[in-house]
Amino acid sequence: VRETIRTYLATPNLSRIFATHLALQLFYAFMIIYTPVYLSKYIGFSWGEIGIMFTIMLLPFALFELPIGKLADKKYGEKEILTIGLVIMGLSTLVMSFVSVKSFILWTALLFITRTGASFVEITSDSFFFKQVSTANTDEISIYRTTRPLAFIIAPLIATLALQFVPYHYIFMIVGIIVILATHWSLALKDTL
Image (cartoon, rainbow, N blue to C red; front, side, top):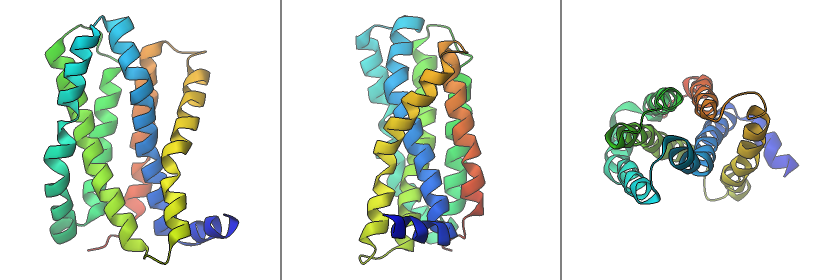
């Protein structure tokens, strides 16, 4: 593990894409844990309404990942699309902190936009990472895959601390800021095209 971490630290593109992917996984962890509770308890949606909203919210992964992946591979490179995805994801998540009305259409659209950004980030971060490694780099791949469980440890710790000082809806502001700050790493990547 130490040797693999040293490899990441010595290879800027690996450490930067790891940090960017961790931001995506933190976004997922926060949203999976805190959004349903917020929509039900604070906004007042029924679980049936939330189920429909979440079904629509997940459509960008089916609609956009293939065409975005092709654009990243053949025309633009991952860096630009990854950064655009982070900005979309971050800004739309920030907006969630300021929406308190019970509007099915508004919340569904907002959640759809967050996942549009996430779909851009997911496909381009994986594409970029796997262009940096080969089948011989199993240790580097394993460390990259730890971003998900790591995020599910970090997110509740951040939320627990934050909720001592801010109202529940500001969780989304914290997530949005984390995601927008990840553009620092995405913009520093050396693009593949």
